[in-house]
Length: 161
Image (tube, rainbow, N blue to C red; front, side, top):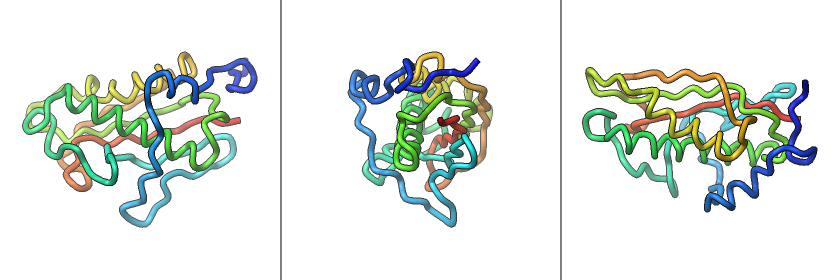
């Protein structure tokens, strides 16, 4: 069974974003030698996105120490918005068929084991925007450090028409 895209009776991601009061930011420029997103066949692979807002991290540090799990989840949501911005810039959200896989990386204080709840911030946004098409496979991994001292980073694989 083929999942419909927005133009074929599926979810209108633009309307959902407007309803949620979310304006997609410009694509976050790469911090090293990579592209924000690339398309191969009917999939877009989005590089890890930090929770940058206007080019800055709202918080730095490890979740479970300087950053609470709730703050981490909000930052993961911001990462998801940046993922959507990268998809929009490359192919347009109107072409999204399915969010296939999400990987979340959480800079974790020793003993912190709440990575899944933190990455839910991103997963929940994809569900809010795309409904069933936003449900995905996922990894939530605790790491020692992330670029720029970010508490969280999210990457995704998105099927497009």
